[in-house]
Image 1 (cartoon, rainbow, N blue to C red):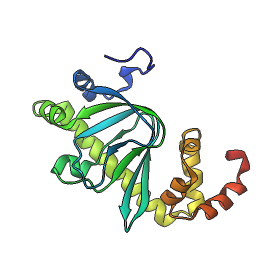
Image 2 (image 1 turned 90 degrees about the vertical axis):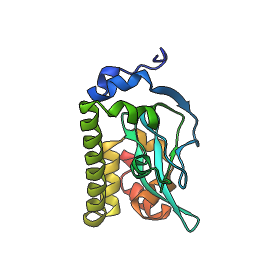
Image 3 (image 1 turned 180 degrees about the vertical axis):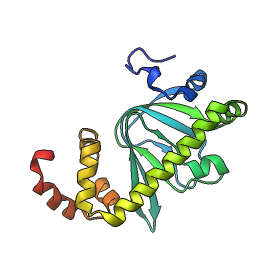
Image 4 (image 1 turned 30 degrees about the horizontal axis):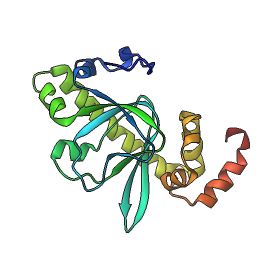
Length: 189
């Protein structure tokens, strides 16, 4: 099932996801394509094997980046996925990417009698909440410069693939302010 061109070790998957490989679909996603679209119901979650994605919300014709998804991350619009409501965000490929797609219906059917999978879902949602709480705390307690340096520290190679405008939006600053910050750390950029 795995493409021989992808050097991804399935033993790295959480154990609860291994039974889901029977219905997971590996897909190549072109840069600019969306996995989830704001206003549309979310019908999947996905695991990034290669590539970078951004999550954003559009308000008054302006995009606000709320996060990035990197290799090894699982992403979806949880509120939409679990509540059958339109998504409040868009998840777009910033690079060509390879993902495992887990369709909602098959995933929900598999979870019904699978306690480890139910535990995995709870842990996944708890981790998602913790990520959001950490991001909220950082937005209140750290400067944009400190948050930029943190992003550089955690994703030093992948951040180079993200357009500066999206990073600035994520940090809540202008591209010009981000450029000034980057000039302070030429060895990191």
